[in-house]
Image 1 (cartoon, rainbow, N blue to C red):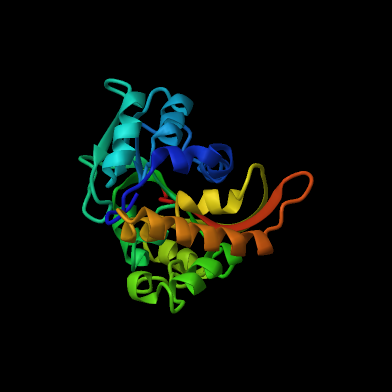
Image 2: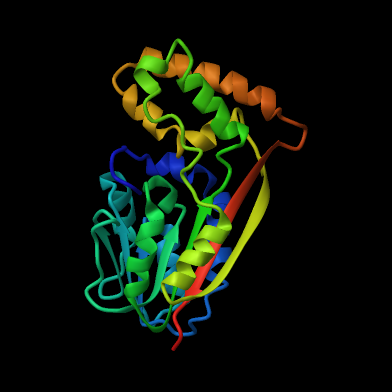
Length: 264
């Protein structure tokens, strides 16, 4: 995860199956049959990184994340000589040798100007290697607009409005395609919209507490009354646009996927 915020691995993993599905579908489009070296940047709590080591048992895998909390959660999953986790900023980290696969799953949206990073990541690749990433493309949906409007309201603007607008956090799919081409990679870019059916009370609020609300929770840290007030109002607004049904709460979530293969 990117620097600047405290991350809660348990909260993030609350919807591990739903968060893991895009990762699995992204990796399924990678055409590298037997990668020897793999880097997973923005690895989070490590379970998905571990799945790379299990899928390719002959590979050495490194998971990179800037969050102390995420790396602490990931380290018990390490495999001596096969899978390690490193705390580092993905904007500064570089692999020690060329890699066959770079994965960046749901992390680039937190990095301003991340389009410029793709050429550098492409340079990490060995011939025949691949760069695979996916980013959410739902910043125009209520799960984000509700938070943005609330942060910019009279009640919260002074404390929370500074970085509230994340509508330009991701690029359009064709921009990623062109960036991969410019980096010398063969592009495979697509979008998918998931209709998650979430259970429990206030599930959309619980989902974004693991991601989109991290800046809010950080800014209000130490003021539990303010946190409770903000979450109460945010939850009420989200319930109005994501009403629970008999079978659960439907949460639509659009994502952009991209895989770039370096000719071998």
